[in-house]
Length: 478
Image (cartoon, rainbow, N blue to C red; front, side, top):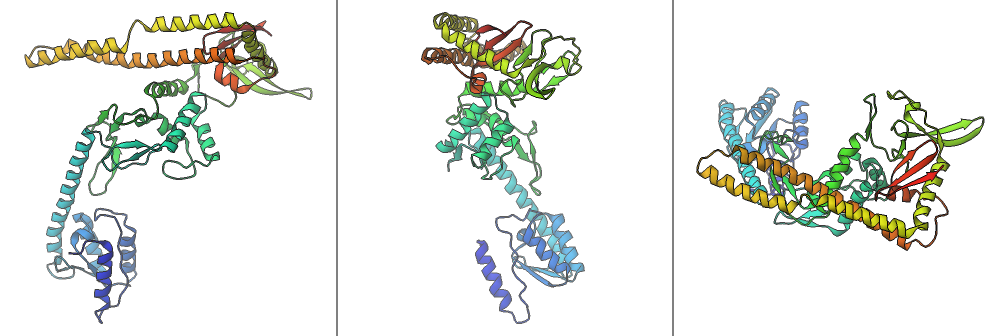
């Protein structure tokens, strides 16, 4: 039996050219494609030549090589028969133009189709067994490569790119902006292409594999003949494995990113119900808030009697928001100056602000002591044991099951809250280090400091309040 494609091509080449009654018209073979594929390029070329009357005899190794779909096989053979083209199936020794050719083909083709179905089911079974063991299928993923044992191992240079994507996002960049940066740096996509898309960046930010977990069988094959796949929405089992492989992104950072993705969908809803989405076009975007009505300020370019300037104005004064507002319009230079003064005020009174930051750390820790993941895990373990005992004795266990689900949800929330607490403490410590290390006052505005430290800037009639991410608020006369 001929196994490799190259040996089959060589065999038929010699066979056809050795027969003086045959004129060799070429070999049409689709490498690495099964007989179940409808979109075989070489097969379609062969059919087109037959339709043009250029071929009247086709030699093929077997029915399964020609097509494993009974309907497709018979339709193709009938079309070729109407064109006067005979197909000879060497393994079965059947000519399609013979009197009993179609009957024999339909019988044998149904066996070939059943073989294809059986092979498909065997493959599915093996894949599900692999999923249960936490093994991943073939994949292209930035930061990981798949070992021969089906496990994921980190590719160090690619992992650094993944960490940068997560860091840029948490620094305020949008997936679109991150995609632009990756293109500028000439970094290829997971599939090796030059052009990054917003959806590719989003898929990296939401892929649980980067925190060391694996959700397997996200898609499944609907039809073994067409190989059509669809997103798994509960039709077949999914497998979620925690600690499946080494993480590139710490779990707490991954959870923060998921929270931030949700938050950015709707940053603010106006009184009239209008929803405003996230923007990072400018360092002041969506952090300048009106002290009068609570709406955001918008950046505008003004031309007042030939004098051009950039100002920020409350959205309620620019469009209908359902709120009446009389807030002042403020020049961008005044905003910049207020930020510089606020940071310099901190640097000029280091001891007082250091004490305030230490107090903030203690407050954050106290607020998180009420519930811990460890306490919840202990309760869950006890309830699960009780659930097993009741199930074995055929007692009602609905209340226990409900409590287990409630605790699981609480555990997830507590994990997110813990991650947020750790991030808040880190921000406070970072600001403490910055204050301690800064030996001189700022002399000019620095946009990166706004993105790094400033949470909100509130505009009042007679002053501006600069609120830092560490929980410190500073009022500036402006």
